Image (cartoon, rainbow, N blue to C red; front, top):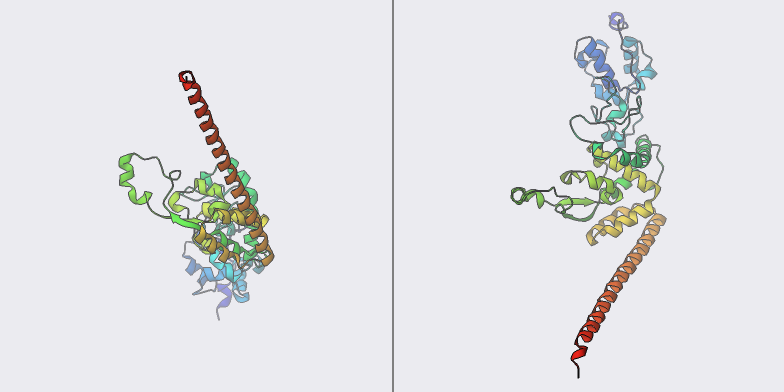
Length: 345
């Protein structure tokens, strides 16, 4: 066997960057030596291996071959993989980079940028962006600073859930099921959501102005997202797919929603139920059946108090309006009798 020459350490090995993923690092090495990544893996003794499979689990033999060729320890190589991500969360990891750091050198793919809840660069601490598409720029810096507390809490829960370390209830999938449930019937864009258009433009865009839009609980839990998201892009996919296939703005809003529901599940859930219609409330109650019974009881008790307060406020407004009408009527009769008094014999 001519194994010795094939496993000699490469003359130049690029040092892995902090948090760099195996796919990106091997791609940089292959580019440096001017060959496709498959050919580079073959030179490392790993023919017909898919680099994406290596990112999930780098076996002992595979790790030893790469370590012998690159001079890196097997532990350092495994640190660049996603082997700590549990199978139920693997759909969350993108094959490429979802987001980009404006300060990172080109060609560096960090593991954080492949995860839907990675909103900050672990090396530079700045917000990640998306190329060519407006993401969090739709929110002002003041809004982002206020939302970051919830977003970081939600991102932490998501990261722990993906690694099998989250024991909170309701679970992350249960929270996502609630956030992505429709709380109201789908409806066309409201006047506040419609852009300013001339009469001719409104006629030309009739299909857009009358297209039904899904109204999900996320819009109530995170109204900041409801105000800035493009109207046709407001809906998110159901459940876990909402994160796996969401944009930066959507995933940030979902992380904020998870953070808020984790801190105050009773208050936010009751608020969504209060804002829902009959069909939406049935869907939400169906999602809540997976939540702990004691928590559901607290939510429904809060909902009852909110409805009583809302009903009392509505009654008070009606009584005020009726009182004003009676006062105006009496004043009108007094004015009329006063005007006609001189004519009475």
